[in-house]
Length: 607
Picture: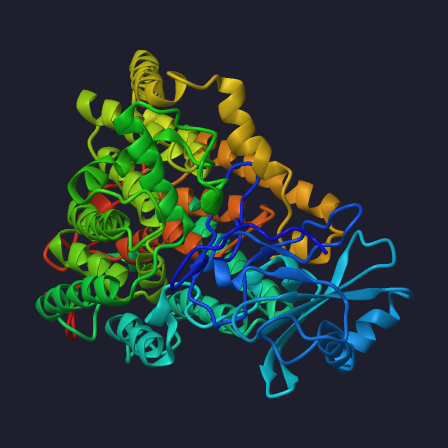
């Protein structure tokens, strides 16, 4: 009989697993509401006595999988014996099929909550769990509730438990109306085959992958995520390197006028906040932010020694935890994984800031019409609500990248310095945005003299370095760079994940390395080679680099879509002219480009 499994967290939720990224990216895993008897797990077999997949975090102690000695006598308080439930589980056709591939496999029974059993089947040597069955007692017998094999034994988040991420945010009655609201204003009924329609549909096509994920079909959901990502990467590269075209002098014609879209932004943001407050669930990412914030305030070590219910929550850059400090101070923290109002408040503020920055950026690029359209797109896009209602920190990444992009709109000393500051902040939140630093550093250099280029680069690098040093003080006060590296990048690099084609299929390491090298080469090429020099080109380039980095990582998840989504929308919509400023595109072009005549506006352009 094995010792008791780790204590599980009380009440409504359980961590579905630390889904960590290797290399450039950092994790997003999930705290999920789940049916009784199901649990989040990682495989931790003992060498001598096999153990079932140990819960990665917690639920009530009454639900701990507790080993039961094989016997025909029911344990105290039960009406079914361990041998009986093992026999019932072994009769499941899927279990028989799995065990046929592992001759000599055997089963152990465990109590998994009130009137719940777990039967785990192991290989002959006890080193690998090959099948897991959850049963419920029914009189003097038991019936099967769940059966899992393969990756779904160790990865509870692959089981499709309802509400695991964002609770009701991905319910069809919420998701599908949002898809319609997102697409509707940008439809051009006069040009039904417009490429913009396909671009927006590809952004929504990721919903198909999510639908299969929500039903536990990761063998289908994982490969379905890649075609939209590859398409969007190609589109961003085209927009990054293509010069503005004469057709871009046409204003963006929307089906819904900008004033109505502005009202839509207010309504949608109110709906999002209300849904978060009443229905959002804080996943491990938000919980980690609150833990780190508390440690900063109390002067504790930022890395190492995290609570057992979020043992690897210290895998982010220091800025992530510092961003949660104001919220932890305002709302406090009980010291355990409770409702975490500080994490809710942080997620809401990050979400609002993203919408505001998109408005400011669009207003700067093409005027208030584009600003309203971009803010509306953020508010209506279902994957941004998915991140908000999961109370993750992914909107913070978007906020800091957008702030750097907005700073790049100002070719002044302050603007260049701010660009370096926000680049450093974004990179030290989650590490993927570090790949954008060369882009921000070289933006606008071609229009300057040689001396001006040197000054601009020096200013950017100085601002970046000073910012990185300052925000690293809370971490370096207690931890060495080696310790921080081991707790973040090294830890992640040694973890696998079934949520990418690389982890799911396991035999594509050579191709994965080629994709990763290609992503690095792309980031450098976009920074060095001539590209569209305005903010549209910069936004498209940043989106391309982020998507390319995500294509090569071991773990990809839907919470990362908000990282590139606002940049993609800026590139797709910003290339159209503002009807109030028909020469806006030309005005942002370098002098060497020809100045076409402004196209006459007709129809019902956005006011």
